[in-house]
Amino acid sequence: MNVLAIDQGTSSTKALVVDEAGEVLSIASVPVRPVAVAGGVEQDPHELLASVLGAGRAALAGTKQPVRAVALANQGETVMAWDRASGVPEGPAISWQDRRATERCEGMDPEVATRLTSISGLPLDPYFSAPKMAWLRPQVAPTSVITTTDTWLLHQLCGAFVTDVTTASRSMLLDLASRGWSQDACDAFDLDATTLPEIVGCATSIGHTDAFGPRLEVVGLAVDQQAALVGERCLEPGEAKCTYGTGAFLLMACGAAPVHSSAGLSASVAWSVGEDAAYCLDGQSYTAGAAIGWLVTLGLLDSPEALDATCASVPDSGGVTVVPSLAGLGAPWWQPGAQGLIEGLGLHVTKAHLVRAVVEGLAAQVALLGRSAASDLGAPLGTLRVDGGLARSSALLQAQADLNQAPVEVFPSPHATALGVATLSQCGLDPTRGLSTERMAPAATYEPRLSAPEAEERLARFDAAARRSIEAHEEAQS
Image (tube, rainbow, N blue to C red; front, side):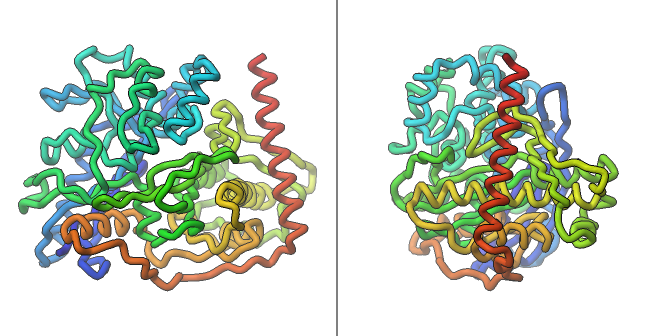
């Protein structure tokens, strides 16, 4: 039962043909180009669809093995308006990075916001789908539907009007306990619940498609970060992974019942297979790879590949602290308007000191997310599994292990998301097959070198700087 697993991401779409044992038979990738606009980030739906079709067809062409099904992982909180009758998009997709719904969030009654969090498990923030949907609604035709991009892509592939439960759990519209749309949440955002897609499980077959050439069953759906959680086999409560992509996304499995965070994290559905479902806690830094790209744009770093050598050229950050909140602060602060902050500048500071301080700032944000998740579950964070482009950086991962005060294991494949959604597809194709807990051996393991008091001092310094960034934003708004 070979599966075509497609990971439709922010900057590229990857397609893998994966066999029943999890071996990758072929790979293809097509870039996509987010466009920054005033106050936001947009993507072309037609480009997203073309990338899915192009990558999928190329991956199939790369193997002579027969393929039975296609699975899709998606960006999660990216939304778009489209005409359901014709399938034609009405304007660009509004990226998960977009912050233009900030005012919509800030104008909501605090009691309503608290109620929404209790229903959905998500703090009120423009990062999630519903605020963006509410912001977009007055700008499009009343007959248009507004959904996350997965629903439109699946409709183009097989005519279905669905979203999977993990993606729905990133919207603020899902009742986390019942795993169905919440009428109260829809009312709070002035959205019509009857226009929302059907919620299906992650291993549910939703139809067939001829879009890639051979007729394939469409089965295996998940939001990208939850798919990576499955791919890395972080299935037991307390097991955690972090994906370093455009942003950094830490997820910790928490079992068969939702755990509502008291430490500022999100609670979401991790996966569902048949009648079984599991939940997770998660937090995010909006700029990880994007922060490294920013350093290159400014000329502080020659290229992303030069990151480790640049960091190694200095013994430390020279006393510089960087809060790399270049697109606002996510969990556990939830301050979308907060801006980046650099402290400790002096004549002794070089480009390398600044680059290293950015890397340490990224690691500090993730370490604080892990600490928050561990606090919610009542147990310290153990080994952290990592993947994504920046997982190639020894400087980042050593800093991560130091600040976590726990080992960091590098997932041996750069395709955790696609492998995870392929696993879900295999479960759907064979209902007797459950999620395996067998893990791949790590490509590398980083052990802490920093003492616990030093790690604590660095985290405290970063947290204080982040709070000063928030205070500066609040003062500017008053």
